[in-house]
Image (cartoon, rainbow, N blue to C red):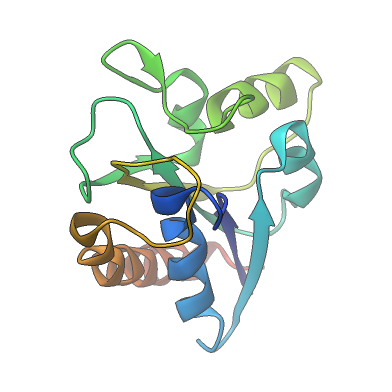
Amino acid sequence: MIRVIGLGSEMARDDGAALEAARRLSSDADVEVLLAGRPGAGLLDLFDARRPTVLLDVVRTGAPPGAIVELPLAELTHATIDGKPLSSHGLGVAQSLRLAEALGRELPIGIFLGIGGARFDPGDALTPEVEARVDDLVAAARGAIAALRGHDA
């Protein structure tokens, strides 16, 4: 079974887009969806090296609102956009993965999918440009899930 982890905060406008995409995937067959919020270093506890993983998040640096960013999970440890960490959170995804590396933790095979956000101020409504692309993030996630099926134990 493929694990999908959705990150973000529904109370910070566009930061909820990845959670919404993950929620839309929850009825798909053979997919386990975890809505993780903003786990920080707790993200490491959500990984299982034996379970292929699709990680969904919102990115705020450099990517235009609604743009979809895709990277293999293994490459995410050093990923940046315009020299800034690829996350909207305090301890970002890349930093959490570097921590896992430093601790000798084995990461799962996986794919990171990010969607560019525009606004992160308090509020629960996505901006129109990001809302219009959530279905594209869902489609990209389904493509990633299909690609990872051969690695499913």
